Length: 554
Image (tube, rainbow, N blue to C red; front, top):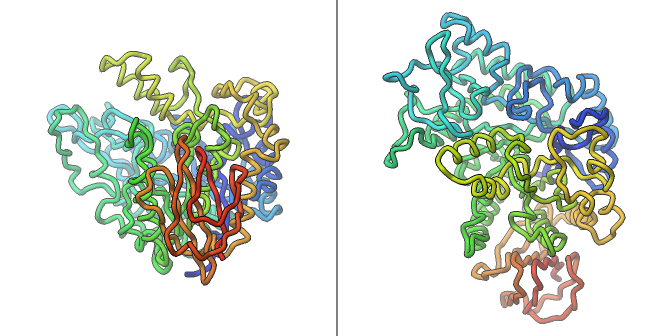
């Protein structure tokens, strides 16, 4: 296995709109991020992933880009970004940008030209089709609900949008489009950024002919992932993309790869010919609510994560995460965000952070920020949430029932402003925040976490220090143990003759786990735990609710 700087790094995602506001307009910005670089450095962060800061009308909070080579006015200027890049590098950290090349904004100059007439030179930069019998070209549903097609009166045709209707999909079949994108990507890399997280990249290839999806339930629009997610032929596009851009630089690349299976690993992240260094896969996030009492299906969870750990070992590299800007807060989803919030947050951190791969922390995760429950849909911002609410209410569901779904899984759970202190608006802004602050900020904030040596923040610091100091935790192989246990997720990391054992009780019940026979004659020393541990030499461990332990085996 090749040793690389990005394998040994710890990454931190900044959602700039919600991170830190420097000028009192209620919106986080680049200067706010600069103000908090020392905070990230002190936590132990190596790489900052910046969610989109490009020019955008903000239909989908920056993921609808109208100019790839300019900065959104609300966030600052290109001079501000250059300062951020310089200050980050000065502290020995790196920056990767969000790269959104499946689609643009409908306000991008390319699309404005494209929709101006059927004969325009930019028409084929996007996917335009005639209607079928007075309806959309096919029955594909947008990921954000409704049709994946939008009618344009001027040219009497439909354009495709896998996401929002203001995010028309680029036509990757057009070489001119690809060349334009490669030129832009190299412009950023030549500027000195350290890589990309590549958004929605598995959607760029569409099924030839755009056939209807099977519709046995007679739906108006049908989930269309089989029409545009990791489709045959995508290899041609991604191989060319990587060869003409990414592979010419010593950078860190992470593909958001919905629909990519572990069997595809060599193509996507293979050490010799992979498109990217690592990918975000989401199979484990789909398992919440699938277990008993709608909780975690721990056996499917173990199976899924183990499949990726063993499948990529010696082949490629994992991106490890529980949260991002599209997911609800992990402590509210997987843990207990009330009386066991700190304990369960530490347990979850231990579980994922010490697997083989590069761990990502999403802003606020390191202090145990939780989901939020706003009363009115008007208090939310996310277009996906608003579309869902409109659809469900139209179908007859009560306001309360729809809100319960949003409180559990809505994307704005992770987008409320960062809770820096107990001051007004959590210290995020002196103005009116673009999205309301979670009301629990007086009890959950960075200031409080920094002062408490037993806080979640300091536990993450210990995890980062432990991982960084151990060749075994960086490059060691992974083996699942206690596979049949109903409460505990336990695994080892082994490198040469060194073994580290990680055990995590993922439930609120006390439990015991008996280690396999090969552990009987091995002396163990405790490296980290989220409880005070009474040591014994037995192979039966008694674990309290959400207890996590990390042992060095000798």
